Length: 229
Image 1 (cartoon, one colour):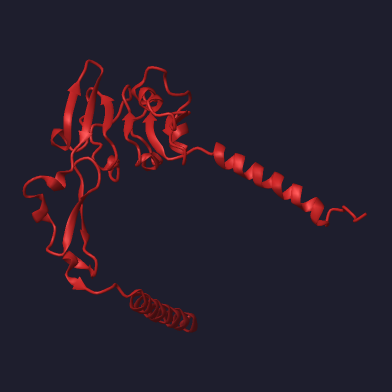
Image 2 (cartoon, rainbow, N blue to C red):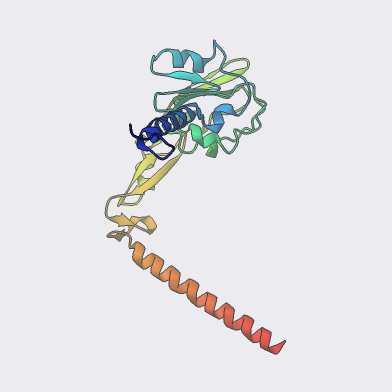
C-alpha cells in the first residue's frame, strides 16, 4: 500500500479542493463596499426591490441588487444620513436604478454621476436637483418627499453637440448631462490632431532621461553644499 503522508499526492488533492472551495465561497460572499455603506437591507417596497424581483437572475444583497456576475444593477441608500454618496460610490457606475431619497445631500451632484451611463432611474430628496438638469432626463417627477429622474438622455444626439468635438473625434455620453470627446482610431493628442499610434517607448524614454538629468543635477548640488560646509 502506498504511503499517505502529508507530502503524498493523495493527501494533497482533497486539501487543495477544500482550499479552492473556501476561496470560491469567500469570493462569492465578497460585496462591493458601497453595498454596505449603511446598515440594514433594501426595503420590501422600495423601487430597487421591485426592479430586482422582476428578473429571476438578479439578487438582493445588503443595499444592492446584483446580477449573476456580481455587478451592481441597483443601489438603495435611502435614509442613510448621507451628505454625499462617498468615495466608494463609483463602484455603482453600472447601476440602472439608484435610490438616494431621505438623505441630507448637497444639491450639486453633477460630477458625482460621471461614468453612470447605464442609469435610467434616480430617486433623490425633493430639494436636490437631478444631475445634469431637466434637459438630461426624459421625465422628472416631483413628489412631496422626493423626486424621480427617469430616462437618461444621450445629449450627444442633441442638435449642435457634435460640434463640440474636433473633426477626428466623436462625442460619447459620460453620465447624466456629461459628455466627452474620444479620438478616432489612429488619432491622438490635443484636439485629436496627431495621427498615428502614441509611442509609449518615446514617452518613457523622454521621461526617463529627464528624471535622470534632474537627479544628477540635484546630486551635484548637494555634493557642492557638503564640500562647502
